[in-house]
Image (cartoon, rainbow, N blue to C red; front, top):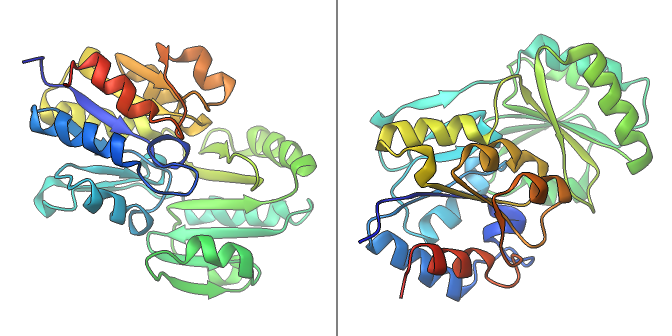
Length: 270
């Protein structure tokens, strides 16, 4: 048998096809990998409430990384630990104030499963309504009282860079910022020092798996640290160039069973 590996899967654009389902072929390969003793986990920017169905579909029994590393727990084992590192509420409010001098569509703060919308927003509500969060709408400067797990700024493409530049100049010491892939021009902000690799390392230490036996798959800029940390950092065929440039290898796209094909080959799964 091959030595036990830890396999970390990003969801959107990686494990999930564009229609947000897991292909039967890749699912079968993941089942085989688990049957041979490999450890499979999810590492996503999504909250737990909108990744839980995939956790159950894959019948996982491992910790999960949510909000790009700002929250990590083990759904099947509460005693494993509960790691939640939100962004200081004062920093969040400073960012809300700064945004008033830019054009933006909305700002959304997520305090675990509570969602705060700066403005009412039907379109975005659909995305955030997974798992029926508690939703509050109103000026975040007044309504946000708790430190948010993440803060999202929805803006236009041409304004995205100026807001990101401002954040980098003013808040670089206290925040990490990412941007989403099209069609949504969204800047995602969490506490400084957090990323998926932080969560992945916590799991690797727990299972005693050295980084050379970690396989991580991703496609977006929130996957960079995790792909760099893993001994096998794998970019999807549909990944952004930055991810492809630092990856050890590139597999097929999320529409072509990139994960299934790569794991079958690397772990000699028949």
